[in-house]
Image 1 (cartoon, rainbow over the protein chains, first blue to last red):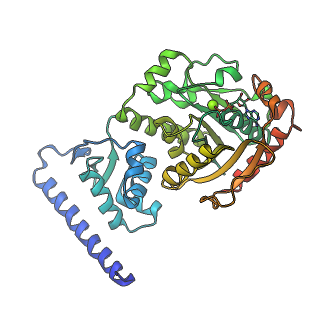
Image 2 (cartoon, chains in turn red, green):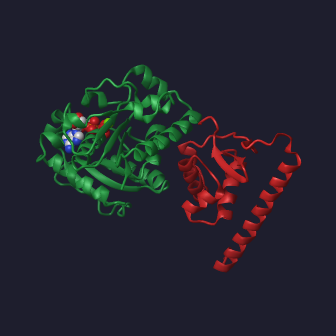
Image 3 (tube, rainbow over the protein chains, first blue to last red):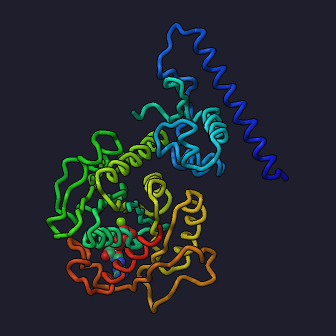
Length: 121
Length: 248
Ligand SMILES: Nc1ncnc2c1ncn2[C@@H]1O[C@H](COP(=O)(O)OP(=O)(O)O)[C@@H](O)[C@H]1O
Ligand SMILES: [Mg+2]
């Protein structure tokens, strides 16, 4: 049984880890700044987010996916504002959607954005 | 306040189209700006009710051939409503029905995206109520409509199979997608009510409409809420509209 404060600590650790991850990403990006472009795609899509897939997702990912469908493209922060969860938690869920091949992420300035399928403008 | 309502049912022929069209009329007559869209691509029926030759169909919106604003028609003047009333028709041509039914998952995923975007554009341009008349049961088109909506009005006929399969869509689809939903009983006999021991007691039954033979003749080419505002069916529509606005 995880207590409330353990949960908070866990979230904080997750938050820090995600921050480190994003900083590393940015460092890597800067070191090979040969062709930086603000829509640098960092993953590929292999599955589409159709409504039957949405229904079959576990609850926590479904909420994140539904919110991303509404916003079309969003940062973890923007998703968290709507779902009222921690940014780090949403960042984790969004990255799971990326790993599952449903979403991809790209960089716009210093921000990392998530989006489903690129064939929809 | 603005919201999107999907009128759905687990079985066919429950009265979805009659209810969706007349509810749209009620909201428009109450001063809301309403947009009614046919989302039954397998059995499109709006061309029977609205004598319009649209420039674009809802099919074109899902194919990304036009924006939603190109595909909706202002019919406020036909019915003299105080709010604006727009309607979007689906192509009844057999070619178009075949085209949609052969679409795969990837296409349906995009269609959902275009629908969500269309709804946003409508609300942003001043529409208060979007009503989606869907196809029965669980297929991509109807569940896309449910997913894009805030509320679901599920129309139930009084028989065991319809009630059972309604419970399945409530548990397996609406609840999972966190939709506020309301049951409308239609074509009831002897004031038969949704069973009190039903599993979905917390899904409210907002109205029980009796089975009335004259409805079949009257709903063609006309909105009964305008031609006969005192009809039992019309009064039911007013009651449903009030209950649905209270759901938010
Ligand atoms: N309360 C009612 N009593 C009798 N007939 C009805 C009632 N409601 C709808 N109908 C009729 O039932 C038929 C099917 O209705 P429709 O609205 O087309 O259903 P759906 O869209 O669910 O297929 C139509 O002929 C309609 O006029
Ligand atoms: Mg119908």
